[in-house]
Length: 432
Ligand SMILES: CC(C)(COP(=O)(O)OP(=O)(O)OC[C@H]1O[C@@H](n2cnc3c(N)ncnc32)[C@H](O)[C@@H]1OP(=O)(O)O)[C@@H](O)C(=O)NCCC(=O)NCCS
Figure 1 (spheres, protein in one colour):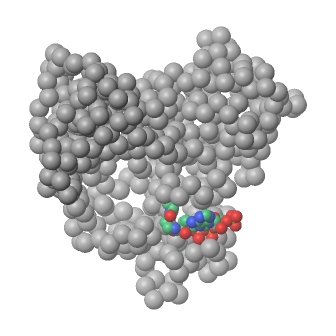
Figure 2 (cartoon, protein in one colour):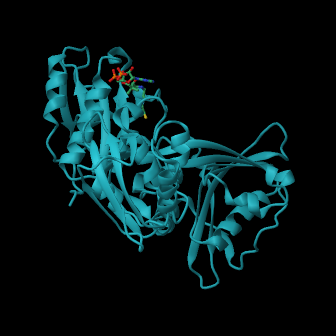
Figure 3 (cartoon, helix red, strand yellow):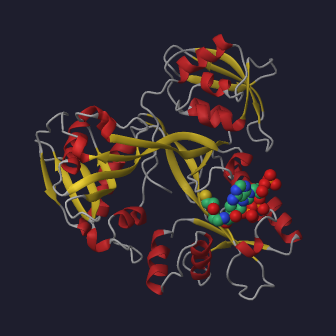
């Protein structure tokens, strides 16, 4: 059983040693201690942000209290208490099939100071995270990325995609369902609780999703001290005919040159069911004085295109969003439900070792998988990143084969496509 309290796990000795050889110290940072403020300043600097105020430090401290914060310190520097590199990880869980989740070692806040870049510090931190996660019993690690070129070398690969959507409201006459419930404006102060309640229900049904946390919802609601849009944030909630709150839309209106053509910027649109989805999208698209609705982290083929008169009013820009790293092949593959039977040997190439080898993957007619190491010759071969991309069914083996990433007979690849077809398109609807 993977522990949910990760901040007390020991530091990885291989990374400690490698960093010490460069005169650097690898150390855990106590969110409640004095080292937290310099840690946060280093994170902010790494992401080109402003210096956090004392109020922002206290707010972040509250939000990150359960995290495993690790810093790399150069004690010979002018500000020895400020880490030259940072990483934040925590115990989360990934929805792998509707109703089924697997513990996930989530990683964020990976920064290396510009003064110390390109000397292997990120490598030491990332491989240290993976070894610590694997030793603690995690079958998967995950992250969301600012750049797509960094993490593949450590076996991470996209497993869920998301679309940044822009809708031209002048072409988007509503033709979708008319929801029978009601919409009401709700106060920003009530949003963290409301967002958590709706999101918690939907994320366990959607492969690729993870839970949010109090600080994330406070940020969406504009209730954190660093929020620049706090005064502009509005929100409506949808209640069904039984009075149950089924959806939340949090948004801002941004004026453009023409007052009649504002942008409605969606900060969150969480819908527990089709009624709520239709009600919230219709509200956004029919909002007076709005010319464009912009919503990030939407499903790759956004459902709103089916609810309006001209689907080309919708522009969807696809991004790889949720990157996963397989640390334990049998447990990762056995964690989800499958759409068909399979009996095949996967040969996985993993330079870091965790997933390396040949694995007998047997999935029965009920879609239950049993995976074991084997000496048999692999039927298909792939690098560990490709396995992460296939895991949730967000991409097909035949598609990766076209890029040379999975190698095997076409008929066998087709069998994988059939078995791995997901019950719902994978989606991660938040950043972490
Ligand atoms: C990205 C970042 C963490 C890399 O740190 P680093 O200590 O310089 O990286 P390392 O020296 O350990 O390099 C490891 C490998 O990644 C490569 N790499 C590092 N930064 C890269 C980048 N921005 N783009 C592509 N490759 C990069 C290195 O060339 C090296 O490649 P190799 O393994 O083939 O030799 C650092 O530049 C940074 O903090 N950037 C700003 C914040 C950021 O983007 N964080 C990532 C958030 S998701």
